[in-house]
Image (cartoon, rainbow, N blue to C red; front, side, top):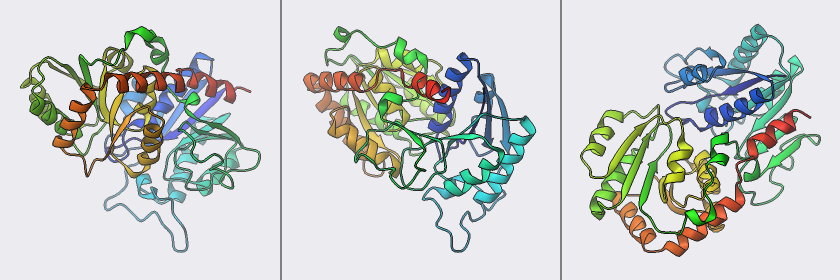
Length: 364
């Protein structure tokens, strides 16, 4: 089986779409499949990482400045249309050309908030089956298989947005995690709600510098007894500044572009971070978290997960200050029973086998 992936990473988009596609590609490769990636040369595109993981990549040209309008007269563009960088017909044509040059594919996997059924339909002319990975349910899709790993509230939210024949894989049971997350799941007795080690990670780029705010918050708390791991993503534009800040604080270790995130999460007792893909990574390992949403599309997941008692949602990046974070950490440290409940609920929801389930569904 040959599988093509169309996904982008950038400072604006973040790294989550590409990272979860890489997890699925790894699972498919373990089953004997061949994977091929198509992405656009946006700032922070992660092309080097894709190639390091052993996959061929067609890198589409960077948008010419200023970025052209992606909405044609009379069209209703997706809410995130600007993330594509070019008008969707141009992207579809360039993607089709790249795939035709690479040969025939059995599946096209599309993980991009900026495209909808029009883009997907234009790629169907090649006869491929299509898997769409979505979280938003805010636009129609033309696909054979749809994956949305988020907690579903309400049920049936893709009614009328996908074809009648489309199979839907819904919920965190299908979360696209790497195998090390399932392997690193701690024994139930490992977590008791007490906090000795903190993990700070706000994604691949952290364009709002929430990492800096979290470090300032910890400095205000004056809890030098807490060990702190700080992870900076590959696209973080403030790497040097944050590494220097970490070095100035006691008991703080800075990590860059970590390969084994599961090990750091398993060792931590409380996380401070964003929503998105890492929500399910933390849940799989029973790691309670104080979460800040860094994009509007993260709010539904964060709100639902908070209602289910999996995490504590502090609000949007625009409203969360260092003082907010300091108070949230102080409250969490004093509430081990709450953290223990979050840990157990998270592990009940995500078992780490989602990637294998999706790969199996594509192999039917």
